[in-house]
Amino acid sequence: MNKDVIIIGASGHGKVIADIVKKSSDKVIGFLDDDLSKNGVIGKIDDCIKHKDVYFIVAIGDNKTRKMIAEKYIIKYYTAIHPTAVIAEDVIIDDGTVVMANAVINPSAKIGRHCIINTGAIVEHGNQIADYVHVSPNATLCGTVTVGEGTHIGAGAVVNHNIEIGSNITIGAGATVVKNIDKPGVYVGVPTRELK
Image (tube, rainbow, N blue to C red; front, side, top):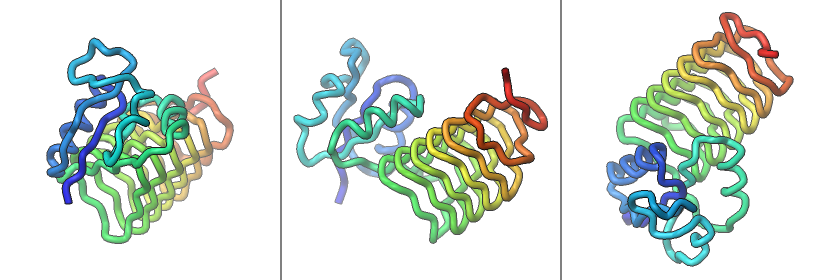
């Protein structure tokens, strides 16, 4: 049965998710955004509680804001998976997550709630990705990587196999992670170092 979906957030990220919903043969009812001047907006975010029998997805790239919205409302959340994504049979993907075009998620990986696995990202076998994580375009997480809640992996970053990255950490674009990181902060470079 096809689903009716309302997207929370009407910026560029929301438009990408709308495209995924349509390509999945589901229907986009419209967007909720506190900026009512944006195209396709049918109400403010708080209006989500007025809509019955629809699914929602939070289309906001900032991990903290996405978490705040997702935890504020008791509504049904939609999981958006682009048809060109390659996902192994035993992968677990929780509610509210989006997997974008040409992403690859290999066997025994688990993706938490309200994550973003962005365009062309690679999540290798055995990865454990906590809630509210963003894996940016073309980032590569090698085998058996663990990523804590709210962490952002930048575009084109590489995380070596068997690495553990804690919560609320930012890995900069193009960085290479070769050892565990548990202290919140911003890490950049090849290999990564903390940005002071």
